[in-house]
Length: 209
Image 1: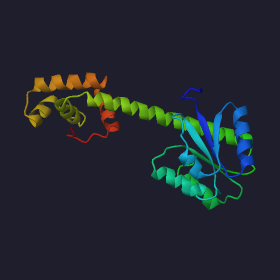
Image 2: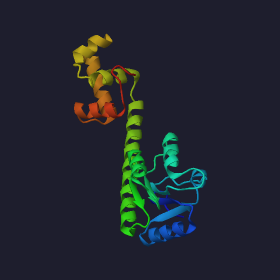
Image 3: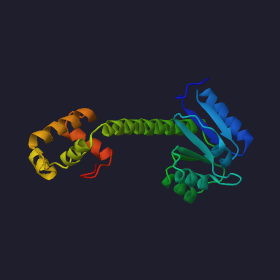
Image 4: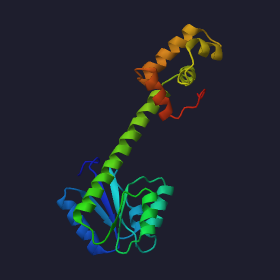
């Protein structure tokens, strides 16, 4: 059984010959892949939790590739897309790229162009996953704070001094200093600037608990 973290390329094209050709190319380049004849088949599949990208034909039976791109976005399925088409035009490619596609290739395309786009797409998905993982760790740290520590942190990151925070919360400056220290330690922040960056990532509003 393959490791769950191994990257995978999904190919969606209604032409079985094209699917086989692309999968053969991917295998020779060391990529694992799965292929589907329609967008609906892809949606019904059990996809592994791994860095991935989608090589997607524009002209598909049922839902076409561009509509499928929007459906994935609406469903919050974040996967980089490389479009392939036998009869693309400039407005079509512009629409695809504006909606976040990595590349728009017209058949016949060079193997190197497809493989280059796939590597770029997989790198993009790996980075997104790392960022999401980092945010999840940050949220765990924040959840470990007491309600008062969260209050103090929210005010600290606005630039308020300890004595100003004490006045705002109706407590002593030494108490604020203790809560501030606890918040810094639990958030694993080495500086105020780092704590401010963490608060921005967590999208904390001033005073939010």
